[in-house]
Length: 166
Image 1 (cartoon, rainbow, N blue to C red):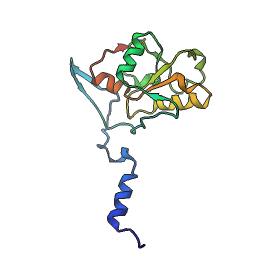
Image 2 (cartoon, one colour):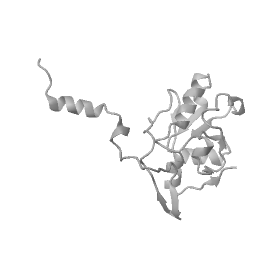
Image 3 (cartoon, one colour):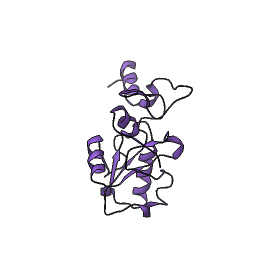
Image 4 (cartoon, rainbow, N blue to C red):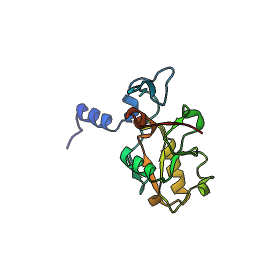
């Protein structure tokens, strides 16, 4: 069997490329949170961050907006894992802010008897995935963690309610 041809090699290279490298060029001044232009209309900046995997950590289930809504409606815990300077002053109603880099030190604030949803700015934001990985490495039970990968990006673009950070 001979060497594969260059077309085959180039196809393999493209398939294994970091998908974030083929995105739209970054803006000089980006915004992580979709900006509400008027009711029902938002401006989304897709040029920042790196696309995150759908699974934050082995054994942690990824959820969507319907699960977040039901969780919220049931009064169960939701953690906004973003650093305060990346929130634009808004969050998902009922969530508590515990920045990703403080979460392990503050894990005593979490109730291990309840499942907690963690989120950040969206599919290109690593803050909640980093928080989840750190918690799992610190021994927190994976069956008590849910990952909302869509984060504020998807929450806002779907027109769901937001609240100002407290």
